Length: 300
Image (cartoon, rainbow, N blue to C red):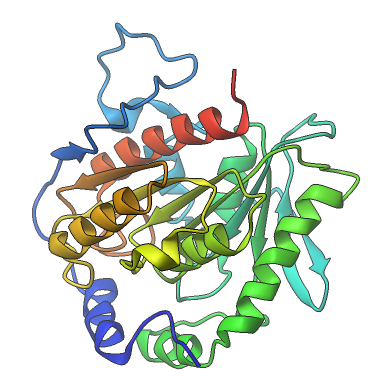
């Protein structure tokens, strides 16, 4: 049975997710043939730092604060648990939103469907999308890297893909959503799964891959119809720049529509609950992701 992360890559991933970040990073390399769309509603004269810009109804600093609630309190969640076939998920709808709504499948990191991912789901819903976080661990949430390693190695690829496709179908058919267009987003393990869903689901319109282990075989990528955004860190030892370059080359060879963004940052740099979180680069990456979702889910 094929595994998304070979053991050798997993061992590097443990170090990447558990280590302390190093340095202040802010440089970005953008894919030249795919110019970035402007952020909806952004004033071109706005000179505020990225961490101060509004992203999904929250500044990056406010989103970061959700992951550091005072002891004895829990940052509020806006969504609800839903059933997706035999699996469970977390559905967040935009305030006052009425179907039909564009939908986003949200895919957790190797830790499982924890509050960090639920906050992400709420953040995406605040953009006006129906956001559904799927649970590929059957309710288990890892607390340590060893637990996460054990959980990811138990994942059955066929079963997880079935859950992802069921999540997509939920967004299309549920009367609260009835999504006319859909996208996916995932981080780390979930980034790889976002890519796999894009390959397997012909009706997906867009896929965001945050530092997910890429597929570099053109023939495997060829069936993908969704537009793809890849977000990577140049200091990510588990996915080094040369592997990202091979991914870019394979996507171009397969004639897929894509955009790759690389930031001077480490693995998991967009997760405020991770010690390698990089607030400035996370804010920049989210602005690019917002523009991407706007482009593929609300085309003019």
